[in-house]
Image (cartoon, rainbow, N blue to C red; front, side, top):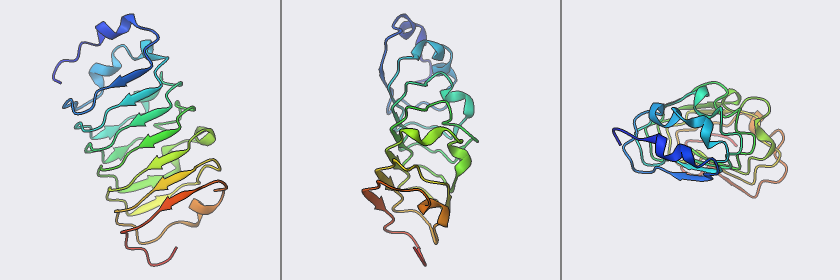
Amino acid sequence: ILNFDTYALTRSEVLNSLALSNANIINFDSILEYRYKYVALKLLDLSFNKLHTIKLTYFIYYSNLEYLLLSNNNISSVEYDSFTYTPNLRILDLSFNRLKYISQSLFGETYYSRMATLLLDHNELISVDFYMAPYFLSIRLENNNLSEISNTIYSSVQKITSFNLSNNRLRRV
């Protein structure tokens, strides 16, 4: 998509699902122009695009967002607290990107209350250092370049049912 006319979507303030996968989106600017109109959005699918960076400003108006699909892009950078304004997020899919580091700053301090599934598989992760949400049910970190996992990742996990670390270079778990 070279030109995305978001004005057509602004008439629907109850839009709850927006799928823009495989649309050659390079940046968020055209989508963000009317982002304040998408306050009811629960699902945003931007998978299979050409995004490189996730900025803090991208999701400020998406407090009702529950499913954010960002897989199969070229994301190598996620700004500090990028998902702080999405307190209802249940599934975050950042798989099949170019991420090398994930830290607690990615989520901010109030982020974890509803997060159930975090997909970070098939990246280039070397390091993962963040406190897991006590409500996480599934975490996928397979097919990365992890050689160790920080102790903080295990600190507060209470209900996890699936934790996939296969196909990494782990020396200890």
